[in-house]
Each structure stands twice: as C-alpha cells, then as structure tokens.
Image (tube, rainbow, N blue to C red; front, side, top):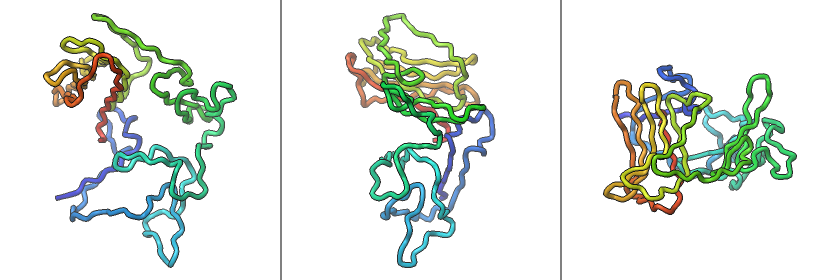
Length: 251
C-alpha cells in the first residue's frame, strides 16, 4: 500500500491540452506505514519563530522567512484568518509589492476595487496592472457597477461571444439565480466547442424535487457524459441560490 502526495502550482490553469504538466505539478508515491502527523504546536506562516532551550528546526527546512505576501491559506478545507493570529512579528495587513496600483484617490473607495478585492500582475511593459475580484452582484473594471437581475421567460436565452478562449482543462462557473416555476428542466448555463464537447448547469425536476445539476461531456477517449446533482437540496421557486461549479484535473 502506497501513499500519494502531490504539489500543484496555479492549479495548472495555464497548461494547454495535451501538454506535459511537469512544469506545474509534481507527485510521488511513498511507503504507507500508517504514520500520523499530529500537529499540536502552532502553525507558522511566512517564517519561523525563534526557538529556545537549544531546540532547532529540521535542517531541511529553510530558516529564512518570506519577503512577500500571503493570503487565502486553506488547511483541510478550513480558511485561516491571517488578520487575527495568536502571535505575529514584522507582518501587516495589505500588500505593497505592487506599489500604488491598487490605491485610489476617489471618494467612493480607498482602493481600486469599489466592491471587490484588488490584486496586481506584471503585464508587458507596464509595471503593475490592477485587477479586481468582484463581490457577488457587482461587476465592471473596478467592481463599481451593480449587476441587475435579468428575468428570463420561456423560450428566452442570452448568447455571449467571448473575446478570449476559455481554459481548456478547467472550468469555474458561478451563478446567482432564482428558479421560478420549472416544469421538467431549466438550463442555467451552457458552453460548447465545435466538437460539441460541453459543460452545463441546470435546475431539473426529479423525484427529490427541483434539483441543481451540472453536466459535462468532453469526448476524447472516454466520450461519456458525467453529471452531478445535489438530491438533498430541493430548490424553492421564489428563493435565490448561488451555484458554484468547478472542474479541475488537479483535484
């Protein structure tokens, strides 16, 4: 019996179809001797606290701390609040690595993103380009535009022509919706390529009630339909729901 261990960077999201994933993923099988890691000491982030009494950290562990920024730390599906640690030294909220790219002098917001989270990437000759991750219900370059509800009627649809190609190996679809009265099934989102490989989210009437579902058929050697449904949740026609569907080959 072996134990599978994997390290992935950026979820291999920039990897093209059929490409070697060794540039973003490494894995190894180790002998499974049923050992346990029972962490009862504090979890340390970004560096190591000094030890006393002649104690020392393992020699393989870097003793130099990070001179950068950290956020979105998750351990076993639990997200840590980095703003409220038990103890800290030489750390502060915010990230100055992108200079003033996320700063704003506007009266509506002290940061570049009015209703969202700002970060910045190096892009071409421009040192830092601010980007926004908007809160639900907001959009626009600075998350300054309120997104209004769009009411759909039977036989209606909205069709978008994306300016850039979507990632080939991953999908991350989020949608806020109110089901209304559904007879049979109601399509929420659908995307397909020229070969009719597709990804779909829907609300469908089943024996368990109105159920949220996700389906995808990517063809290839499997050429099989895969679908997910949450039978334990029966949607109410006049309530709002936030659906989040992800497809990631590294998880």
